[in-house]
Image (tube, rainbow, N blue to C red; front, top):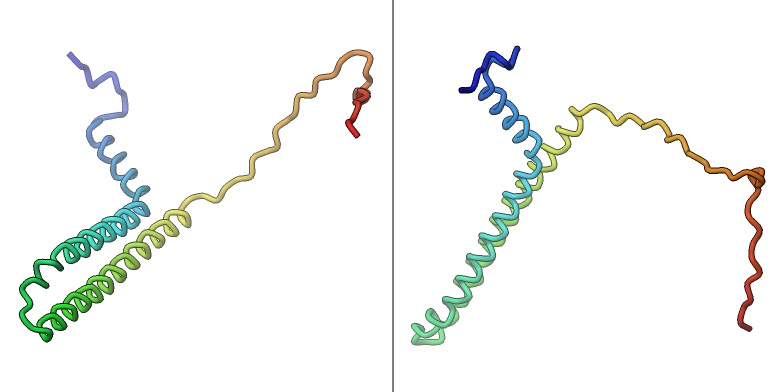
Length: 141
């Protein structure tokens, strides 16, 4: 069987697993806002597509020009309301995502500039570091 004593200071691996998941979720919090915005956009598209598909049925029920105008007004009022609500929710989700991203970035340690890498120059004996001569290349006039 599996002996837990071999892990030394790790007394509860399940607790460590969930702590890791918690840190992962905290790191992904900016993505949650963006995902929420995407979800709201898809919901808006779905609601508007359904409204467009209902137009023929609703128009066929109209018996007078007044009913037709009322139905058109209802369609556009609903569209305006849905677009307004969704744009507010999308903006709020983006704001929350960027706020979380800024908070995460502010709490992170500043970037340390890496030391420049040392170059490995290859030299050949007899060249003394001079550049090779250019070959004569014929050019077409």
